[in-house]
Length: 394
Image 1 (tube, rainbow, N blue to C red):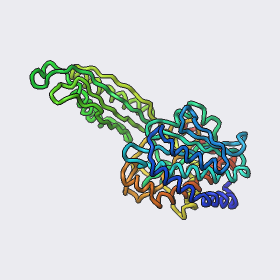
Image 2: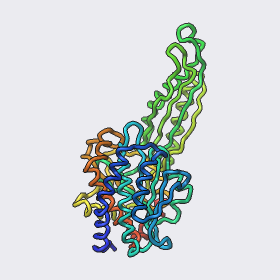
Image 3: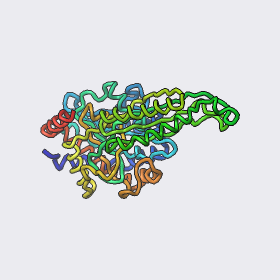
Image 4: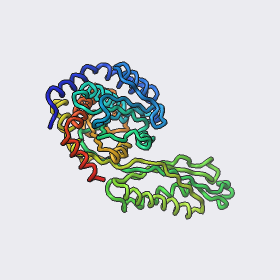
């Protein structure tokens, strides 16, 4: 059962009626980029807008001061969450377009809340901090914020329209090498170079890439390359991000990377410490829900028909992947630039996130998200299909 024309119109009108407030929210967040866990301005502006529309806003979920929640409807029925992100990247600002994610989520929530009494159930806005390496959604999962939800959804800016692109499981490995210092000219034979072991780790990993499955990504950088030019480095350090399409492949590749570090340390007769930082799980896109979003987006965007997936473009990682393992979820990507013009984490993409084109896409996304959320609330058959697919994927 699709949405009635009356509900569709009420949703679209609600988003259009908030256009100026949503545009200001997006532009303010874009002009004031804040790093993970430090999104105090963004969280305040979102909360102020929601309170001005009559909603109670909870702060401090899962021990994070910039995590937010607002609700409307009957919690005894089905419950759907619309997620917003609003953290930025170091130096490059909103080159992932999280300002647009925030405004679309707020707009979708306001629109769905307008009709939720007719639809039944409850619509929830969740402001989720620290997607850029902090895993805010994971902390919220652990705190029970996602318990009892029927579905969760958000959109992400991109260079093309894709309904169900994969996201890679990931882990970060910080490696510290400990050697022995010596005078670099007078007595280099007395030293044990931590830096040599560190650089050899990169070379060994590169030699293992032939054994990685498709979709694996391993990349790193040196965080400490020594102390002075005339001292054999006593200390060196690096950090690697390891990603794969599935958790088992991630575990296999992680073991390879750690063996490379251990082998490099052995060759230089130094010691290595490896500290793992929790990464993200792979994304399990719910196709039943994604296709409904696609149909709504095609209508709200005047004919933009999204691909279901696109193997021509690579994938990153997101803590929305973790959400998709605990509740049926979608994370469609929508273009704010031309195909191959720019991608996330590039300066050109940061500019596009503040453009009129980016704003238009986010408005269309807000309408499609709100329509999809309300359809999940109203359509028992869709909700059953969504749940069956999700259970099978686990």
